[in-house]
Image 1 (spheres, one colour):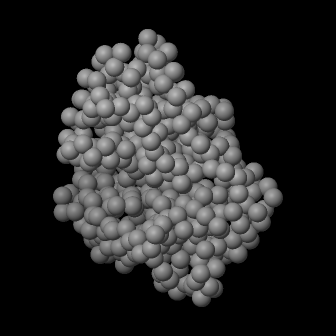
Image 2: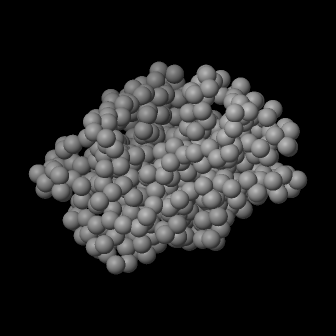
Image 3: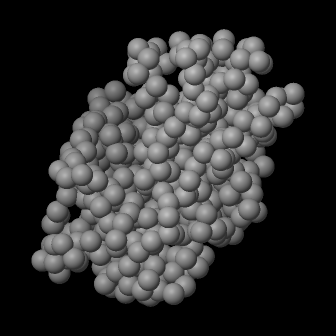
Length: 492
């Protein structure tokens, strides 16, 4: 029976999953990777660590399912977006990769926008330090020798592809996060490249995420015991687009809400959606003729973890949520809860303000851990409602929405989110399914195992959370308080 391998290059680990032709998970593997922070705002990783961790994760898969691995028919790749990996003309790594959560290049973002009068329209996105293009301007200014030696710039999963196949290729969804892509036309934009001092020759080739990008090299295939056939490698996708493929969010209006460290609202569309002035990410999807709109709040489940560490619940987040539920069971007490602005690490949508700060408003001596926990759960929901407002303004509100991520394990929080957002939220079987699963699905399509519609189907739903109209008025009043808490920074 044929098998398909999905590999996801995350920020904290590389994960691998092996599926059979019926999409049953045969084996999984994971290997941690470290983030280096040598200076304030910096966040870097050694690309060789991705390659080493991928080997370790795949080795775990091979150990668990040796015979199934020998039937491998395709590989798919996913990864953290935006991170700049610089190679010389021999394919040698020139410096540690500058990651998506690196904040050093705010000055360069302003320069990019200033260099191109129609930057926001052309890039379909606003310039942020996390994106790839300003990172290269920073390297040009501070490390000119490395900039001069840079022959290729790859994203993390595409560096892994290079090591697996020798090919320089990326997909549309991941490349859309560089600020070098014409997202509507799905091609590199010479004007955007020139603004960063880059040339088309320094970019990888582009394919759709479900197309064949390259083939496993004979050397790597031999080391894995696969010597009797060519193994195609799919284009793959950025982590969010791959996750969407994994849960079947591929038709226009299909969305998901991810409750991880950050909170993400993702919606698949059949055309480019753009509202960069309100920090909407308008990217290509990992499938042909599909795009997606995405909004992000930087502190979601991490805000609850932060409160847990302050209240002695760092190992009992479920118990802390239970206290929030008990507190809010009394409507009068819920009305008196402090309102929380969850900007513990700044905020992206809709403010694009890395210096935004968190706060409790209305905090009093009688408030206990349950009151604070309720405020945090509600505040994150309000932040996601800000993002939903942006999607609505771009005519890209989800028609259906699934819950994924670690935070989705809480039925109480899921219900509160449905009430605040006014959306029906579906919790699928296997809500923890991640980007590696979606990457394996892309491998199946690329290898000819079935059509996109047949393979990228939605999982079964195990619970649905419907908005409670009885709670809308009090939540609206509390959201009005929340909206008044943020003060925009003064214009320079």
